[in-house]
Image (cartoon, rainbow, N blue to C red):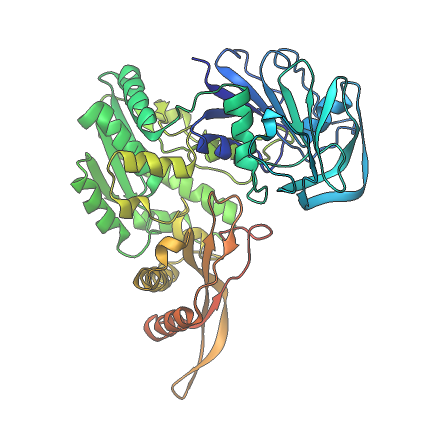
Length: 509
């Protein structure tokens, strides 16, 4: 059935947000690079062209052949997409006198247009471009303007093609979701059938067909993604799923024991493996963040391979890969530039000789949680803050030692438990502590100390792509700081990180 939406990625950092907004309308969509348009277009009922860091006037500007799409399927062109359609179809794009970036108001909206149903004049939109459309393409009809942008929105007469020079996917565009709904549901006629219930039913049936009576091994991490993947697979194949939960020595305090017990209570066929010393040895004297990630990934594969070989006749390796992992790990000379390596995307060594199954590969994090809720997974587990795959290794700046891990585990436990005690945990998207590679002078009693500094980090976000630091109460920070310094030997100073993403990242490494 044609009820999918194709998003062509021209390299905008907002492309994932477009997909998320479409999914929030209960509509399934996929992101594909502009120069790898799917050969089979039958499943797609509508197309969205993303923004881009490129200028359409540049010699190296993305210039795909859209002849199989335009005029054949409803199309919405956003920012670069809108300029692309104008520039190469009889219109003109010129440099703006001023860079059009930030909030703006739609001062004129053409009346009677379905595209703008339910959207009032002077609604706020978000601009982000340095070029502007000076002349509309052939058969272009202006639909909206702002004080500085004459052609803020237009359509092409005779076809279901719409274009806008602002970003409806970002929070700052007040009626952006309504605009997307007008285009996808009212104009394109896409059905809103993408729900957690439908996903679970369909995925379990697909897994049963795909796996049959084969055996599958899955490495559990204690996180939301691998847990939801495990429960889905368990529903499909039961005890033919063999879960392995590896303690890399870089988990939170007492997490290995508590999470292992929780997994067993959920009816999973799971084995716990304590490989703490092996991981610490692999990280010995290593300070570079990316090399730490690679060392942890290599050690995990070795441990996991040892354990997997103890299960006879295994055919499949299951992974909790989710859609942002897939998108970020695809480097395509411009669009979606690789941000960091992901150990669970394309990282399987040849010697393992296992087929891959990834039941969550097309889900965003919030969708994973909704699917988990649909299957009755404990809300406390689903509500856990994201935790990095390399664990505390990338929250300890510099080299890793058992003593540094102990210090950070104690600090992290006080911080996280404090958030829960003050009913702040669920108001924070992600929180953690960072051990800095510096010592500072302090005084305890009558003695001078020269001990470690820790930074506390708490951010609010919806997807991790952007994040704001959380304004935690001073009284809370005071209490937590006192507890850390008084109870964690080796720490005499606590600071709070008030950086947002961008320009900072959520993790420090």
